[in-house]
Image 1 (tube, rainbow, N blue to C red):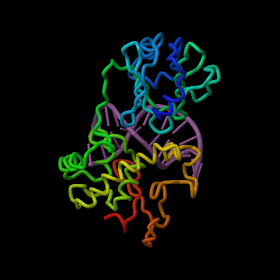
Image 2 (image 1 turned 90 degrees about the horizontal axis):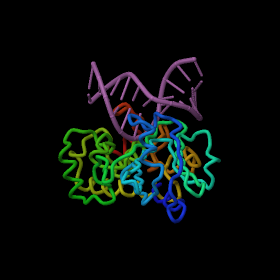
Image 3 (image 1 turned 60 degrees about the horizontal axis):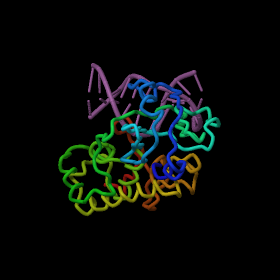
Image 4 (image 1 turned 180 degrees about the vertical axis):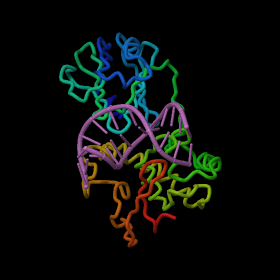
Length: 258
DNA sequence: TCGATCCTGTAG
DNA sequence: CTACAGGATCGA
């Protein structure tokens, strides 16, 4: 997302000349006017991603932090006047283009931070050495594997879907602590976390929940997520089960994942 | 460790 | 019509 946004931004970083927080709840607990005050008049210096957070560096010595949650979307349109009804916040550049934050369910967040701000996140799977992963596992001897993977303070970037997929790939039970897993399976999981995120970020799917792909039969890339009752893709003869963990659904193969 | 909360579209 | 989905945060 951060990369796509970078590619869409107008060249020469025109200043932001106007903006509106259409839905005040997106900046809560910050006041919409405070976010606008640090944004309007500034230009964009860089767009970065860390974990699930998008960070937009501004010349005002602020950082605009955006979390898309599930249904959020952030992009540049050539003419800000053509923003649509799901727009929760927007900014207009000096050339008339718009940076638009859309989010039908309005769960996404936008906050103004000081320069140098860093979200409290664990390492990204892509640049986490195996030894560091093992050390993190060792510090959570009783936490069920799936809850461990979804804890952003431990490891950044995996949500409900990708955690389930990585565990399936590594043949690990979502309910058992990783501290009890073999080194071999931990290695597989370490690799799977990076793989699953790389695929999710690839242009092919733009995330498993992209409207054009989600739940669409053969195009649907998830092996277990939302597949309760379907036969395991490994043809082990069992069906995918759904259990409840931390208030959310976990999908897994009871035969393959032990 | 658990549930409620936020928010709305969609599935039932 | 109600239940549920998602991620993060908060309070019991």
